[in-house]
Length: 219
Image 1 (cartoon, rainbow, N blue to C red):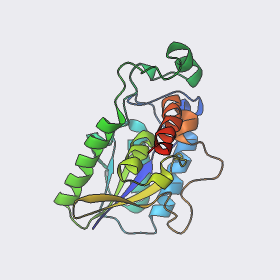
Image 2 (image 1 turned 90 degrees about the horizontal axis):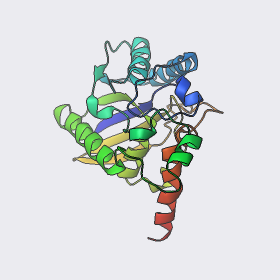
Image 3 (image 1 turned 90 degrees about the vertical axis):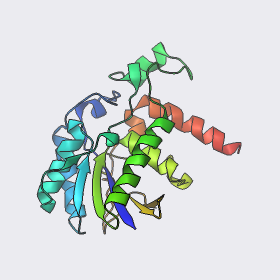
Image 4 (image 1 turned 135 degrees about the horizontal axis):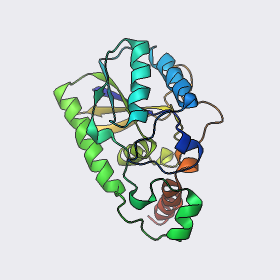
């Protein structure tokens, strides 16, 4: 069994402003750095083989702060961990998106959730094949973590809050991915109280959440 702990990066100014980041490279703010330190303190209670990160700076700095605490050395970048591309919606607030693409109008250039699931799942399974039985930290993004929760079939958590700096554990056994613990406590809850969910910060994710819930009700 290979254990994979997915950590959402710390807060950025665009998170605070409710602007969609996606593939845009926005750095951490001071709150985000404190959240990364908090995640590192929690993760230091367990043993790790390596730390991987999305190449975007907000995730890589989060990984670096955690790695400094754990003594894991330079984080290794893994391109598949990059955030979902939200196309022309990147940089916009929910109000701006609502005016430009009202209702359920598709956003031009947006990466589908299925495409995100395919690229991330392939990368995680490759890591498990190449380093079986390893324990890894992977710093990534809210859209990626939401997608992997759904891909793992963890329906009870598909609409649960994914806050900055929170930790979510997955396992791969015999090539199958499963969610171990959403918001893994590691003795203490990884989600800090009062922090925003990705759906508070990202209007596209918020718009898709109720649509997904409606589909579930008719299955």
